[in-house]
Amino acid sequence: MVARLVVLVSGEGTNLQALIDACRDADYGAQVVAVGADRGMINALARADRADIPTFTVRVADYPARVDWDVALADACAGHAPDLIVLAGFMKLVGQPFLDHGVKVTGCTVFIVDEGVDAGPIVAQACVPVADDDDEATLHERIKVTERALLVRTVGRMVREGWSVQGRKVRVGP
Image (cartoon, rainbow, N blue to C red):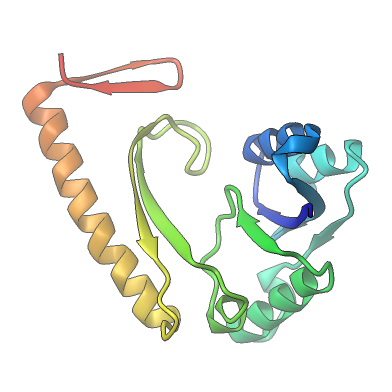
């Protein structure tokens, strides 16, 4: 069986492209069936169009309340009957109506700032499991707890051990 993926994006779409490329191999076991975004006119949607993958856009500004956007996003994803929804550089937190679709993991990233939005070279990352009884507030708080610990640990290592950046790679230590 080939798993059906809906991929959510917000920018350039390099993670999306990696998934599209991987899905070309029949042994990979997945197919991107739709790409959704929180804003239009982004390169990620153009990448999906070039690959003949259906796209949809659900903008927060188009809804009277954030919960309405969460419902609309969840409905748009569900309309493509995915086995898995992948947030690949998706720059919005999702709420309970979306989380009801079974997301199991989220996380946080420490990166070097560049001219893009959360686009700089990655220094460190941590995963945060999504509990069955999470709502947006409890999940967000657990992400913040993990994020604070990761940030303190990473900055401490950087100042004690030094760091270097070469292209997209960050090395902490000598």
